[in-house]
Image 1 (cartoon, helix red, strand yellow):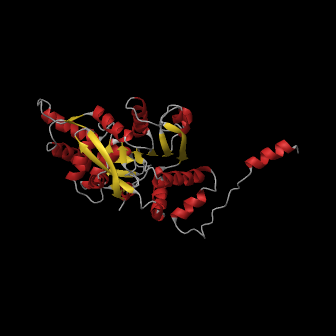
Image 2 (cartoon, rainbow, N blue to C red; image 1 turned 30 degrees about the vertical axis):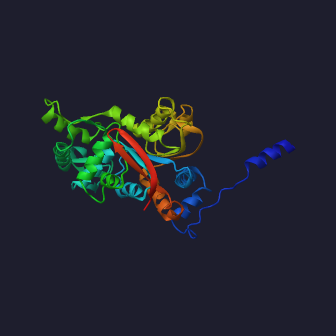
Image 3 (spheres, one colour; image 1 turned 90 degrees about the vertical axis):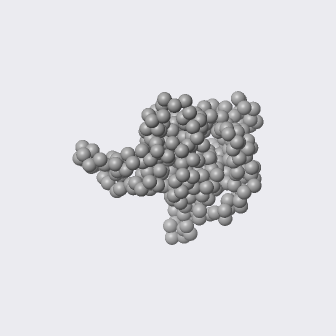
Length: 357
C-alpha cells in the first residue's frame, strides 16, 4: 500500500466505536457519555449533551434560549420542561402557542389520557374527545380552558403588549407549581410565542376580542414588540446558545433574531455560539424544521465556529434523556449564575448575578 494512502487511512481511523456497557452505567449522564463513542443518533444525542454542558459551563455566560414545538406535553414532558426552567439551564423560552396552551389546560384541570392511534375517530368526535396520535384530550375541558383564558384576560391592562408580558401575567395568575408558565414567572424567565394566535390561546383571545372589539381601550397582542424585546436580549448577550426541541416558528424566530441583533441593532459578533436540535424532520424537503444547523451558518444564524449537534429522534425520547443526564451531572453546572431581566415597558436590562438554586 502506498505510504500516502496508509497515512490517509490512519488519519481517518483514529477512534473505534465502543460498545455500550449498561452493566457499568452509573446513571443517565454516564449512559449519554457512552453514547458519544457509539454511532447513528445515539452518538448525536451524546454530542447534544456535550454542547448543552459546554454552554452551561462557558465562562462568558451565554444566554441559553430554548425553542419548543410539537406535542411535548401530550407526550408527558410537562414536568421535564418545567424542571429545565426551574433548574436554570435555560434562560429564555420561545414556544408555539400550543405547548403553552396544553400547560394551561392541565393547570385548569385537564388531563391527557392514554389512547390508541387506531381509534375510531368518528366515535371520538361523538364523545367530544380529541386525539393526538395515541393520546386523548377532553374537548369539553378545552372549551373551559378557552373561556377561562378569555375571562382572565379581562384583568390584563388594556393596551398593546408582547406575548412575553402576557405569558408572565398568565403565569402569575395561575399559580400551579407544576406549570411551565407559573415556574417561568416565579423564576423571572421570559416566555415568548411569536405565533401565539395559531393555538387555542388564540381562541380564548378571540372570545375576549368579541366582547371588547368596540372598545378603544383593550388588550392588543403586539407581535412586533416581541421582536424588539427578543433582539434586546440577544444584543445584551456576549454569547448565545440555542436548544431546539422540534423546529417550526420558534426555531426560525430565534435564528432571525440573532441576525436582526447583528446587522440592525449593532451587536458585535456572529450567530449563535452553541446550537443543538432534536427533530424528526429531515433536511431534504427544504423545510426549516429539518434544515441542518450547518445550513443556518450560511445565513449567519449559527456562528462559523459554533459547537453544534443535531439528533434526528423523537423528543419524547431524546429530551428526557438529555434532561436526566444534565440533572445527573448537575455538579458541573450548578455554580452558573441566573439572569435577571429588569423590564421597564418594552425595554430590558439584563443582570448576571444570581445563582442557579
